[in-house]
Amino acid sequence: MSKYKCRICGTADNEPFVAREMMFGTREEFEYFQCGECRTIQIAEIPEDLSKYYPPHYNAYEKRTSLWDPWIKSLFKRYLAKRHLSGRHNALSRWLAKRFGLGFLRNLEYARIDLDSKILDVGCGMGHRLVGLRKYGFTNLTGIDPFIERDVEYPNGVRLYKQSIFEHQGTYDFIMLNHVFEHVEDPYRFFEALTKRIRPGGVIFLSMPVADSYSWQHYREHWVALDPPRHLHIFTRAGLERVVGRYGYTVSRVIYESNEYQFWASEQYRRGIPLRSPQSYYENPAASIFSVEEIAAFRRRAEQLNREGLGDVACFVVEPRGRE
Ligand SMILES: [Zn+2]
Image 1 (cartoon, rainbow, N blue to C red):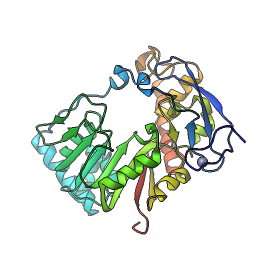
Image 2 (cartoon, rainbow, N blue to C red):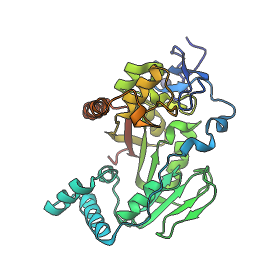
Image 3 (cartoon, protein in one colour):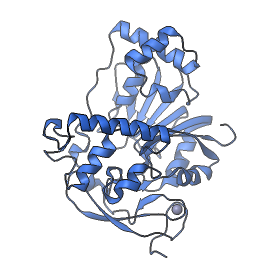
């Protein structure tokens, strides 16, 4: 029996291990463990002051995107989105999907929404994903993030509020969280708050790292997605089912979307190279220890793992039990 209890299922069957802060390369050590029962990986003790691990340059590389597309592209994108959401593809929409790439739109066919649905992005940052959806013709887009400087209203109608899920009011047809849930201190309380903001029957997407993955098995304490101490819980499907199940929800589908990052970054960590160091592929691909060919091979390997259900990042489609 360990001195630590799983915060998801209460089991004390686990063997703690040490992982180091490698994004910025402070190499500060933190204890983690994987629950022997629900297999959720978690930090053993949540640090008192997490804010010091989110320096101002944490999101420095969040790229700026334009608010509008040229009108012809915008027309095509709206057409593509309509066709895709209704599941009625034709020759033109298939060609457009190839031309533009479906990206996140691909997942939205499981969201049970249309272009006028009320959509909430929780932990939206500066709202890049919402702005991206606006270009596909979605009209009712809101984001919340307690860490942005102030409320934002973009000229294209996308609204962002400096609020947490516990402060925000309103009901939505669809809620998405992109790499947010693994940072949450109390997943039960947080998910309960989400259920208060979703309309009855609405779908919630949780995109995050996955503990049932090849990269966790292979890289262990060097796995980039541990990201000590910022990632507090890394779920398995079974662990997440426990959390959402308490509120009458279930995971109806898992869409794997890992990429080459899991390999090059974890390989770097294993060699002691932090993500934000000058020799990192992240900072300078030309100075990287990996060749263009090696990166391409990592990408193909990631695609293969996604097909096998072993990718290290996934979008969990969560909806009310009995609805799926
Ligand atoms: Zn557990």
